[in-house]
Image (cartoon, rainbow, N blue to C red; front, side, top):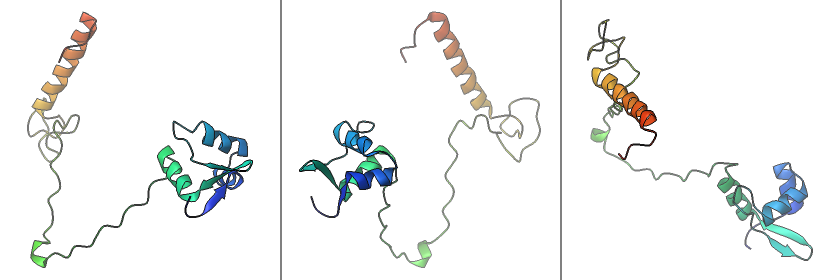
Length: 140
């Protein structure tokens, strides 16, 4: 084991659990992740790096982001990037937020979704209804 070593009592204080719970983490694990430890005499010791990796694997903390290398670009290539196109279908968003008020689906309606989005929604509802009527899932 390299680096700093922590005891079961120290880990229990950090995790705010009992020492028996930390021993259980070393023996049985937490959510399928066993805390690596080594028995020294009658006690267990844990490498701090193993403890940090176990906390990340269990979801208690986020891994530290790796620093991104700074790449210098010529000023000519620093043009604003267009925002990504919205994912289709835009259901239930309006087809055109700056469009006109309409009484039904239209490509330029600000109060109705796009007609193709409505059709996709109807097709999904029909598929679910047919699945319930048949009693089994569709092969597709």
